[in-house]
Image 1 (cartoon, rainbow, N blue to C red):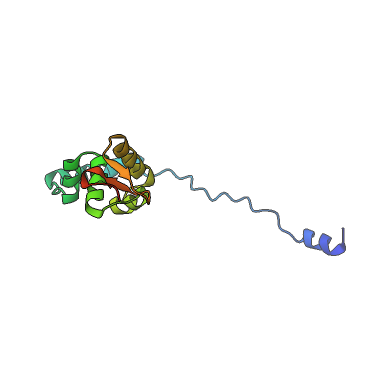
Image 2: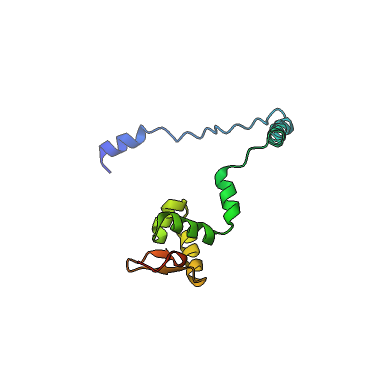
Length: 127
């Protein structure tokens, strides 16, 4: 070992073994938990006292019922589309849109046009 390396090693201080963990117990953990629970129960009481009005989107979803019906409605409004385009229109993920499209196909409610887009059968022939 070189004399420079020996000198550098001799001037290194030993590692600091100070434990900075706070070991003092909380004053009363039970009071903290009870205060959090009281806040949470108060929020539940407030929400039941002032019920939110139903949103028009939620009413439409409940009226149409299933994902197949929502997908079919999107096809009726927007025209032929792939499930990827339906994802954007409906705000769904790929799995949900793909499953709804597959279910519509199995039910015989859609066909695919030359571009591979779903077309409702009750609107006429595929384009």
